[in-house]
Image 1 (cartoon, rainbow, N blue to C red):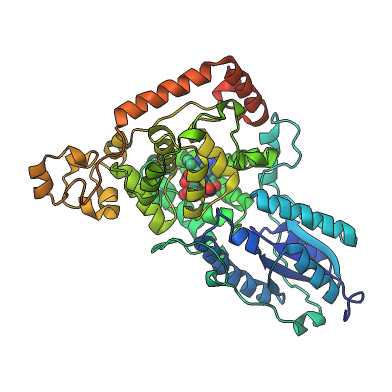
Image 2: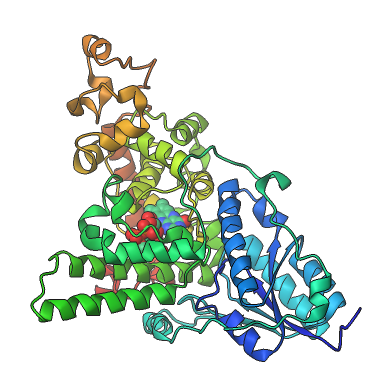
Length: 509
Ligand SMILES: Cc1cc2nc3c(=O)[nH]c(=O)nc-3n(C[C@H](O)[C@H](O)[C@H](O)COP(=O)(O)OP(=O)(O)OC[C@H]3O[C@@H](n4cnc5c(N)ncnc54)[C@H](O)[C@@H]3O)c2cc1C
């Protein structure tokens, strides 16, 4: 108990906010007295079904930089493993905790339950636990009307200054700071990956600068194709998910860039005509981030159950495991679906449209309930963010009742988004010699063509596991029938009241 009362410290609990810039808890803790940072490796979360070793690697890359940055300021980042209240208890015994500072978090059910335990523990010890919002997500929101104004106001608040100097009590230097814990220390699952984005605050800022400076010029046109989207999308999502950069910083730098471009245009300087429209589209998408996160905050059960309970029972009893396995492995016989899945295995990222297509194919063509595909994709996506993920998955699976049912044709997506087959051939080596005209439906090649182009259907590449046209029509009819029922419509109205965008067609109606 050395020095406990004499040297109570401000504890900054880092979670999915691994940065020092615009970090409100760090800012206020440093103003309040001697402080120290803490990151807790939580086996419950790391070993959960929606977690993957790639997530942990990204966290570790971020932690190395965060610790260096804090040390540069004279501070320290403690690394501990275990249940958070136990770690707090131990630190309180060692130093006495004056206050715990953290960002509000809207993640999954495990973190939600964890936060309840942390709050109960802090209350029982009489230690103030201060949580500060980091996104536009509003806790205990009463009504969606007016929410977007609150969100926008948050994004316009001034950036919190990074402390110039941190004061760490002497007693802290006598205990081990703790080591980085790699994936092999946990029972965490792992995909083999080759080209994943590395984490960290500097990488996040570099990524934003390169996007606003040059890559984003054709964002609006580039974003739909998995090929052009690779460099044409911002690629900020993992940095946002792990808080390597604040949403406020992204909003404000984008606004600044727009003002700069407008100024250049006004003064007669030549600017690329696509810039302003591209950045306008980008800003809309940034707002969607918090719009979707708010849904999870308001209704955490969407991680497990349909937004719209009138859709319960739609697919539950028909789960075809062979279909699911083929979809997971990228062996459905539809090249765009398979190439996207295999790209995800290697890189952990794919653009929005292709994510939507993957879920649409699983939901409509294969008629799989969304929950298992959602978990599989959660592990694959480096940027896994439950608030966006489950909302989007349910939207693409057609079970919200407030969104248009959109069934993507995996054949048309080849023609529209990868007509020269560059993306498909990169990930489906077995189709290397198949000419462009056969790339959407290679099974239509006759046996002579299969020999000529070195791709035997059924041996090198599978035939389609389902027929597009018949599955498309059957799914569309089932969805439309259900959507029309009075009970479904009533439930949809309730979903809209609670979660709907006030800019959506339903509200205009
Ligand atoms: C089925 C499905 C699951 C998804 N799961 C996730 C997820 O787990 N994590 C995640 O960050 N995004 C998810 N998205 C949304 C979107 O696909 C990704 O945010 C985007 O592709 C990330 O790439 P980017 O950063 O280059 O995006 P950009 O196009 O450059 O957009 C910039 C940022 O805006 C936000 N954004 C963009 N599109 C959306 C959207 N449709 N909804 C909400 N926010 C958006 C993200 O924070 C993104 O990083 C999902 C989409 C679908 C269809």
